[in-house]
Length: 446
Image 1 (cartoon, rainbow, N blue to C red):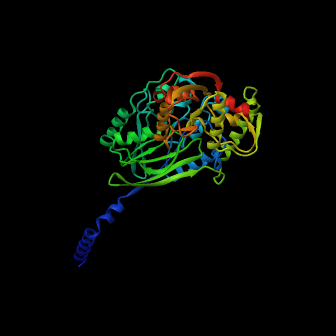
Image 2: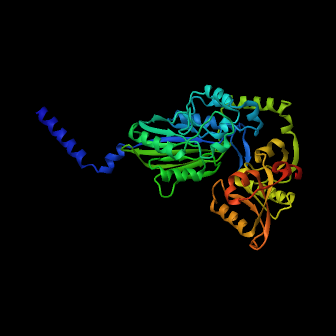
Image 3: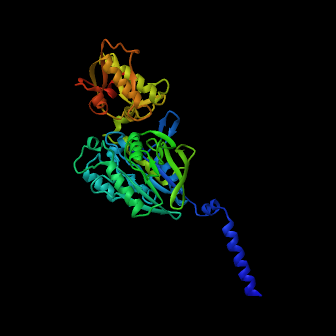
């Protein structure tokens, strides 16, 4: 009787399994992996003022990332972890924070600013970390890494944007075509490594990321970087690629959960996690940051950066700061119009005492004011070009009398970066130098 009973029960369970709906069996095969990324930290170790209040601080960010790591997440850095010249912390301490992320970060992208202090300094920084620094189209770097989390194989790679040859001003780095490199890596990850998901962790502008997703099928998720833009989780139009971008300076961290079934991504969910006072700090790192900041402010080489230069009656949002600066540029250059890229203005300014360090953080680049003379029709093409880039880092703030008179000429005050690099083709002029610099002009007005 017993063998007959066992055979009967075995037949019953096999029949029951065969009657389960297919989606029920597929659900049993699903796995979810959590991925986090921060980018464009630029040595902002302390919390800083934003339009939404105080954000950031590496002590809070590391505590949050470590807690996520303990729960099984993969953590990535999108690069640009240092920034020569601003803030002062970067010049004094360089890449001091990189080793603090050992055991927390799984891989880092090589960003253009990571080379700011030269190839030898970069090599010393690289030697202090245990996580790989990736760049598929930069000589001397690993092209990708494969990580396993919750049984899911995730292929992770990075690319240097097509603007790196213009942005990296130190010898020792060679860059190839990012699209060709991405195509080779994705093919290798899919066909040889047999990964379940492919993720790009940086480092190129938003419009280049979108174009890459369309040109190279097979990328499941792109973590935005380089543009300093905040973008919540979205699907890139005309692709199967998800995109999210955390902004800058650890103000937020991207967190995405990918669901995998049958070795393919079936869905993604997530968003931006604000790094603010609601999050606890890593106490050891907080003490270290406080000690280092006090030493920085006492250092005779940097103490002038922390002297009060003005008192603001009220806070200035980034947009308000930009418009005020543009008016000053226009007046100083005796121009009719002023333009400057969004990326020239990085932080809001709080009400109350203002230090040179805060002003430098808000306008980190020593841009010179230059003037181009152009017809109304030429200027309209510039404005149309800016409008077409709305929502990207390439858009410009503009102070101009509208509507334009196409029959007259205009003196257009702008920055040497915009006239000679960002908008060079559409400007199509030989700019007149003024000898004035944007940040210094603003400082004198304050």
